[in-house]
Image 1: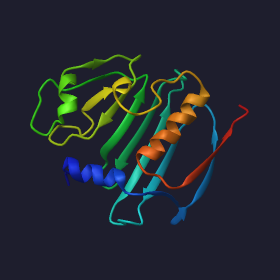
Image 2: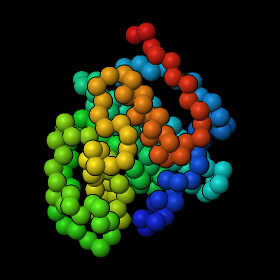
Image 3: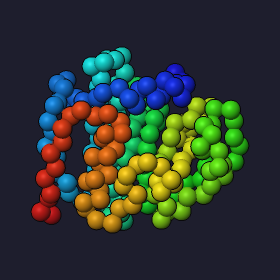
Length: 174
């Protein structure tokens, strides 16, 4: 199954909650430890046909390298991803499905010190082929320099993908 850009945006905008052991979770306590890494299965009561995967990974080697990744679970098609501390190169070729605002970033090389957001674009080998700098996107956490930034990025991404489960984060002593 391939999604159109409109369908991908509709999936992102569905309200979702974490599902654990077959139960929908309204409040979920988690401990922030190093590395901050979690996987959550998400469901939407609005459209139970789809399930989602939310994958959070912080590098063991670089405390400020973090990826927040949202996928449709059955197909494993990426719908949205934010990368801090990761490199990437956008496609050189622009096809008709590339949104106007991404065209200036054709062929752009993102270095490890340029946080960026990957947006779903249909018609490419990977749906996460296209990214734009966070400094030019409305995602509010532009960089990560401490644990507070990591938590802020996590909460902001949750809002961006419409997660309605309330997370309470406890800082790990380790």
